[in-house]
Image (cartoon, rainbow, N blue to C red):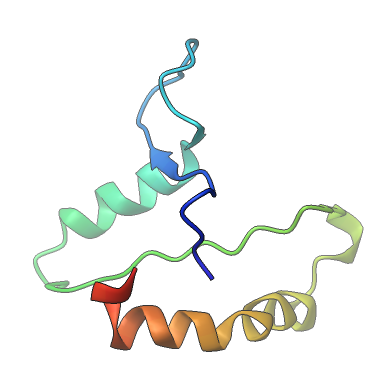
Length: 85
């Protein structure tokens, strides 16, 4: 699943105009910020499944579930054995 040669993604809260990181994701920052400030949430994992071929007209509940189920075994491994990653 996670190869050492793969690039990592970094969550940032502002625009990045220099090449400090391989890949950045600003959208997840808002989610992370909301979770961190919620006293009801003690433990959380943020997983983002990315499709290389984004087609807005094809986004449906079923297609989203399909993307997740394609990697569900990897997600389970990550949650059960995080030290392996």
